Image 1: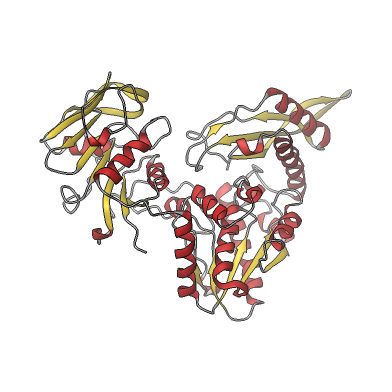
Image 2: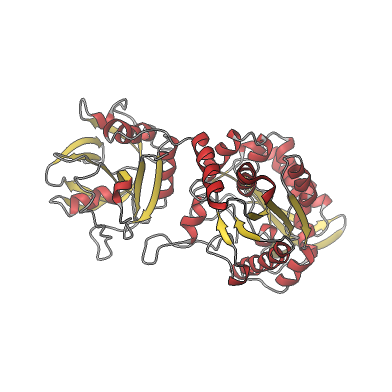
Length: 511
């Protein structure tokens, strides 16, 4: 089935992925491409959205998209930088704002009987994030909305299906942002809302059958949501021709290897568990740099996985639980605006010696979509609600070098924290939680003795996609009990701190 598609051109905004997710929440398929790598076949797309950007349209570093095949031909919505770009280079004027316009604002004027603002009233809250402002609308620009500080908050171009806004409808703080996107995409651009979890499952299973046929596929399971849903989809398509391998890298949570294997058995998956913890710890010996640790863990995983894959006769495909944000983060366009934040060891190809073709059933979807797909496949809510856990595991939650003793210590701390969140009914209110073992010792007193032991940091964040995150205001009583339990029960730890940084500017993990 051919779905209507939205093309999102990325100018480097931290919110670009949010635009794509908001569009998909309307059951419309969207794709992100760098502004300087526009797909050659534009007939596939029924509408185009220009993202925001940290750049200024007035600067020498202004980003110039090639819009000749888009503007006036396809319905286009320009957000923030996009709106300023259209103004600045089409007869309008953009100037530095007297005050940096950042944060909540309210619409003080909306043009009457305007389809773009249907169902949205004056006073509606929007989210601003820019240091320039549009002083004069472009040629044929028609004012659609203002706030008390920003006169030209929204406009359209007469004679085109082109709309522009200086605020961000994709962030939750814009209370009617979803309505605005629906007005543009459905009511104005006429896109069909037929991109659903059910349609994704049906089409993906068919595509796998067609692509893989009767070949054998090997998949590395991690115990996480992504690889599990990838396995269930593949199992649905090819059954026992799917061979799953679950590797214990020695950096999993306490008892996780045994517990997850048991869970998979109950799901009817063809799984083999491999305990290679010693091999990973050996590969990590003496390494302190976070990126080098990721590489060492990734390389060790590939070696172990390759050994196991060779034991299965005639395997031709490798399946991976890669999801869309992995692709966007890791395959940053050369000269494009988005920077690679960290290496994902399940993206970017494998060494030549593996000689396997790759199948990635989830490559096109976001984490929240993976969960919705899992629910439509009947996967247990407990598994779907599991917090994300980094591929390198506790290896990037132990700052500095890694030893078996440090892993043991952090596993105990992590178990007390996570089990406590579950016991207090807090686990499902948190997007991701974990503990970090810090490379500092501090003085403490236990009984009459002075101690000089480790400090651990607890981290719990709220998020919808991991791209932005706020720290969770956990109850003091819970933190007090957790801290007591950790210090009393985990040998080698004498201090517990709670991390109250949001993303950005901090990241969720410490490494």
